[in-house]
Length: 345
Ligand SMILES: Cc1cc2nc3c(=O)[nH]c(=O)nc-3n(C[C@H](O)[C@H](O)[C@H](O)COP(=O)(O)OP(=O)(O)OC[C@H]3O[C@@H](n4cnc5c(N)ncnc54)[C@H](O)[C@@H]3O)c2cc1C
Image (cartoon, rainbow, N blue to C red; front, side):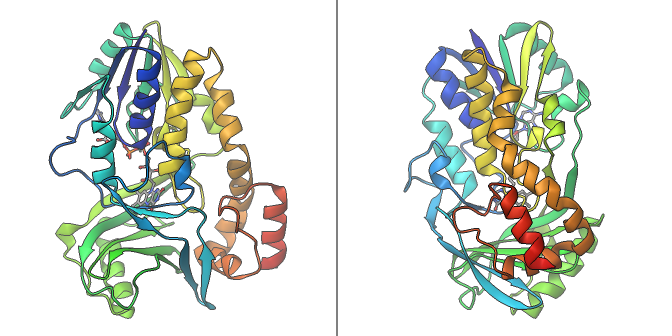
């Protein structure tokens, strides 16, 4: 069996890790490199770290973070972060890639549509883990229910007044986060629900950071990104046939990130494993994805109209009210939505 994986972020690496247990013929293609500098300045915090098939205290594992601070107009609240960890994701990805001893890793390989078709013709399973706006959009109707523009970077400044807790600050349309790696360095980002250009985001980020006594970074040190997510129905596009090969779409490519928080690294890894596990177990990948994501997607989907009406500031008010997210910030069942709405009203 030949397994080809395109995209080597958390989804692709997790897929390769599982695939090399099942077959000796695994190729992982990534347009970046695992030896030089690696993109890594998008938020770097995860919850539920133990769901990641990677040890603790490896390169890229920065420290535990079991609480975070959520700030809305009604003040700040401390949120429990179940199994929370701050990462340097680029370093973690490099380490993870080094642990794949039976996978052929092809770096600096930007796979285009023609090459993707060719890989399909040569493979039994092709995993598309190319992240937001993936290559599979050429072959399917894949699109995103949520796509928020973001601007983020790893910046050096004085964070001693904010260290050590990661913080999320909610404004009407904006979401600003600061994840301190140390008192002198943090991943800082701004996400927006409305359509904003990178320059507009930058101007607003400068204002917001200045308000909280953080020296704004230079524009050139920041990356533009998009926080993408899909609801349950869109997961239907997670599997298709191309040139006689099964293609499974994993991670951000299929939009498995949480629709409210945007957290997606753990979900990406889980879906990468599901993409491979379902194939070798002769099970439906779609079914696995639905099972893995049912409650978070159903509940965050139900919350979406509330979100659209009350905005991020409203979500912040929800978070400061008496909702029990102690087990996990991911809503687990319908009672979470009911209690969230009741608390808000
Ligand atoms: C600004 C921002 C902040 C975020 N903060 C957090 C956070 O704090 N915690 C969290 O859990 N999630 C966060 N997320 C979400 C998280 O980044 C994603 O859900 C997660 O990275 C998805 O992993 P992935 O492997 O699917 O995709 P990616 O991490 O995007 O990896 C895709 C890989 O595919 C490669 N690739 C792409 N196209 C090609 C191609 N044509 N050929 C070959 N290779 C290709 C890329 O080089 C890349 O390595 C954030 C997202 C954004 C935008």
